[in-house]
Image (cartoon, rainbow, N blue to C red; front, side, top):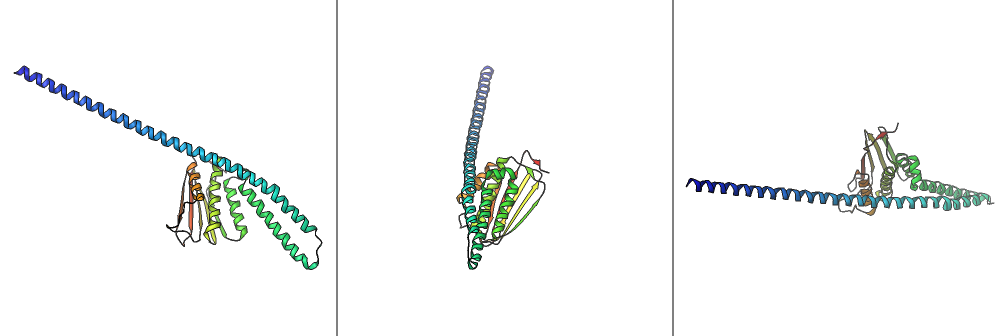
Length: 263
């Protein structure tokens, strides 16, 4: 009887040990499988993110080349035509009664030439390379100020950071698109722009006092989608706050991991 009891105990112990071992193997197998799934999904997400970034980078490269080409065409062809028209106007022999009209036409041509020059500079990537995103942004605000459609208020604080030029172009294009949207759609009177530098963080806000838009108004046009995509490429935090009748505020916050202060 004790021998049978001992055999039964041994069998139960061995069976329990085998069950525990099998259970452990199943748990380990599930854990490894779960890790593989997680790694697969992570790699898939990273591949998609990298693909989207490369696609956007290629899009920006093509866009930059197009802007550069348009800028040169404006400067070389349209600018030349306006200059020739100005020369002809000034060389015309007119009566005293027509002098005032000719002077007005000459003034309009001068304004057209100045506007053309400003637009050509604002879209030319080489100009952004030379000035940097911040000075290019201020120049864009000055261009809007000259139209007298808006009162422009600009402020900044902190020490500017050195940012690689490709990222500077992306930042400027986001801000440029924001200003274009304000000019086209806001119906406001004031633009408030603020740039802040704190440690290695750049915070930019642009606010208008226009009509804004409510939740029922679609705010995901191509321009806004492009801004979100560009911000993701930096990467940077990007947000738009708006309320019908209370204007719109756009915020961009970028953190430079290899920040160097520009003194």
